[in-house]
Amino acid sequence: MSSTTTRKTLLSGSRPTGRQHLGNYVGALAQWIPMQDDHDCFFMIADWHALTNNYNDTSSLPENIQYQVLDWMAVGLDPERATIFVQSAVKEHAELSLLLGMFTPLGLAERCTSWKDLVIEQGLEEMRTYGFLGYPVLQSADILMYQAHVVPVGKDQVEHIEKCQDLAQKVNVRYGEVFRIPQWKLSHAPVLLGNDGRKMSKSYNNCIYISESSEEMWDKIRVMVTDPARIRKTDPGNPEKCSVWDYHKVFTDDSRHGEIVENCTTAGWGCMQCKKVLFEAIDAHFAPARERRAAHEKQPGLWKDVLMEGNRKARERAQATMSVVREKLHLYPSNGSE
Ligand code: SF4
View 1 (cartoon, rainbow, N blue to C red):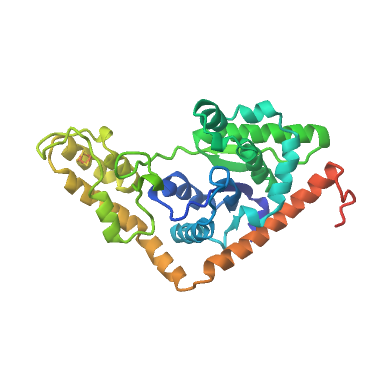
View 2: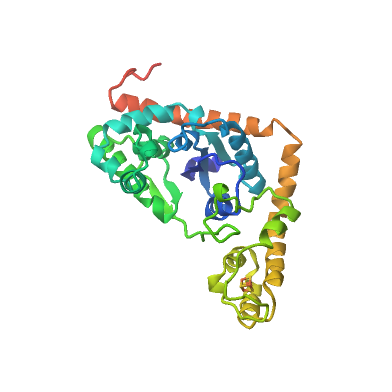
């Protein structure tokens, strides 16, 4: 694509958690899909990052990667327009992480919020590892490897991009223009709760998955926790205290929002009716994804081919970056021939 060279490079990714739920969709995928139109996108399945807190059992990784790629493609990440790849298939990430580690003061790593939270405050001994302490450095390597202009992040991730910028600056000041300084693009995506009203998480068994059938989706939506004040159908409710309303704001057409608020606050309808409206909106929203997924599943090797090509493209870009890094840092082979 001729415009690729003039487009800004974007890097984003997530750990291989397997089947993607509506929280993954709203928080990341729905943001990434339109960015493919005007960015040179690299979407990474961060399998090494998955090991930082899950190093004792990696058996689910292959299946999770497969499901993740299938879901990503189903909702509209397009391997023809974006590079979808697996972090561990591009070994240069490990090399760059090692090098950036040399530039990382221990204090900087220890000030990371997740380290302070899990290791210092909660005292989780199993997290007191070299790998977990260093994961922001690996994350910096992921970003700098692609000379990314833009990294879409949630508010809690901004500190990591700032650390990445600091590291890149530090290297650039000493060794010349090695890295592009990446900028973050703050996402204002709403957070959707699980159907039991808690944080949406596989471990709570409260997720609604993108790949579920209409029937499965309805089974989960109809038992969603609502405003506790609505004990009887005649009790008026407050949408702001109900996670069903949070979903409506994302999936139901804006033209119906007034009707939903009115019917909730005046007890004009029961919660089941309200959930029916929501179900119809979600079901229609994911109908094209279901069709795409069904078509992709007829080609069993497709997800592997997509990753193979994505890994190849990512590796090419990574090798170009590492040639520059090695040369600028006077590392072997310093003459650029390998
Ligand atoms: S009517 Fe709808 S918004 Fe109001 S409490 Fe029930 S489910 Fe929630």
